[in-house]
Length: 168
Ligand SMILES: [Zn+2]
Image (cartoon, rainbow, N blue to C red):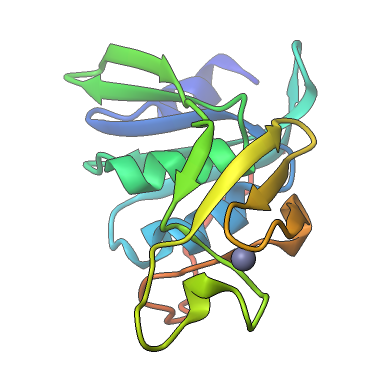
């Protein structure tokens, strides 16, 4: 990346999600609802990375993530780092943290699973068996899921066009 590119991509205030597993930036934007943000976003897909070969990166102006969004990112890309930018400088940088148990975020597909009971709705709960590649297990019916089998309990699901600029 040239110096001029760096300057354009630098954000004054907002969030940088870096070291996203290559190919997951758009999924993350969609699931976290960030794709509905009207704010300026820069998305890099398949950016070369010294550490991981290839990675994705997302920069969003004037947006800060909440805990649920951070947890979704930790499930999709356990190596991701989140930097908070204020006045052109990084004031906080942290790695996402995949919990041992994931609550509420993911739906179980087993119809007879108690978490799908209509009478007494129970929050879903999944134990993380393996972090990468991800393997989780429903605590109620023991069904095991891999990353591409997971159904997130998505918030508002409006499909909107993402204003994006791909860095290559
Ligand atoms: Zn279940």
